Image (cartoon, rainbow, N blue to C red; front, side, top):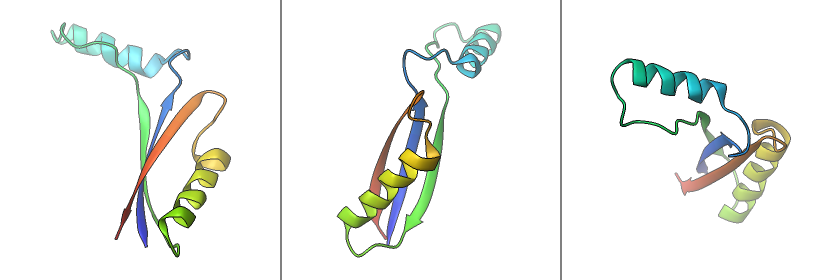
Length: 82
């Protein structure tokens, strides 16, 4: 059994209105040293697999088919045996 920790982020060329809203709110609160906010998704899931390569293949497929919109988003993941 493996634990996958997946990060999905908008590609740098895609406008991030949620990140801009957060950045604006931070500035309004006086946090003028903070900027460049980008918002993404953090997903954790367990993977039943015989080995790490098989687990990685399953997570890769899930990312490509469901968890990330590969036209607009990049994803990465780590696997930890549990």
